[in-house]
Length: 137
Image (cartoon, rainbow, N blue to C red; front, side):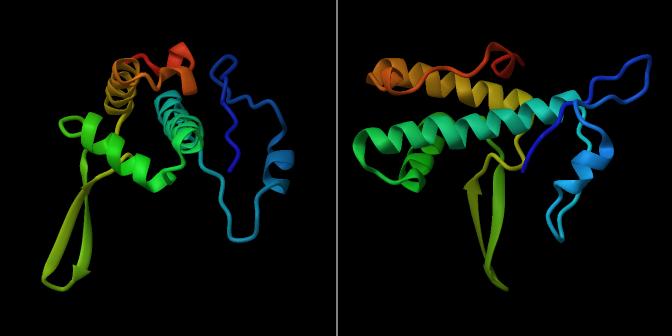
């Protein structure tokens, strides 16, 4: 999925490409979603977490991305990330920490906790911090 930032000019939406060019890139059964600035930053924070942080840690020691995801959420996200309900069957619900419903503020705090833990544990050399705008609350 590609993201294009809306930069309003005199209150009128403006994109780096025409809407026709953007619409031409939409896959069958795809959709265009218009986000405000906070939603775009949250999207980029999630991409940094999944695509940079988890991938670098997985490449470093060979554990899977899912193992690192579980480990980081347990270490750094306990009191930060919201819980997502997963229905096992009609009577059983599993709750797990998730970045999907997390807000920009929650993701910023989670990223800061990861970076703090990375410095303490010596992982910081395997990935760098995200852009400064992704770390603001």
